[in-house]
Image: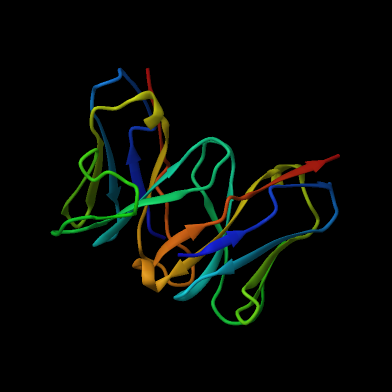
Amino acid sequence: GAVVSQHPSWVICKSGTSVKIECRSLDFQATTMFWYRQFPKQSLMLMATSNEGSKATYEQGVEKDKFLINHASLTLSTLTVTSAHPEDSSFYICSDKAGQSYGYTFGSGTRLTVV
Amino acid sequence: GQNIDQPTEMTATEGAIVQINCTYQTSGFNGLFWYQQHAGEAPTFLSYNVLDGLEEKGRFSSFLSRSKGYSYLLLKELQMKDSASYLCAVRDQDSGYALNFGKGTSLLVTP
């Protein structure tokens, strides 16, 4: 089945710095990647949809200038959290858009802690 | 937009059967998924329904009624390792086919 590799698994950064999270599709071409955020004991909330070769689509309330998404190739989508603050500490996870009947494949997630 | 509701917590005994309900309201329904998620890990796909009826996969079954906006996940012969969060997710064609998740049901399986 499809495999989505996400890195890093966890990262601790200082307030005000930027962090880049990568999601790679290893055995298929992903023209679309979804990016989610999950706060403790909350569900996954869709942040944005990443489209290869075009601008990302952001959900209402998500700042596009703060959460920069790049999908420059068919196998790589990145999310950069710019000028991170402690309230950005969360679990960030990506998924592909493949698979009609067997569910989308998720990356392993990135635990971001901003101190 | 859409509302997806499921119970926050459930407790069941090892070896028993548990049913986790999910109700939803969506404008562009294109399938309902159930995922299992252990703390700090990625969700794992369990089941998918797009037509009304019951889908069975081993110890797990999922039911869908589109007219009622209702689904349930049935877990049989519960094992301790089934303690996890169970997420109901609706795929919405009006949201670019993204999955929109309920808040999850935390299931605790006790001896």
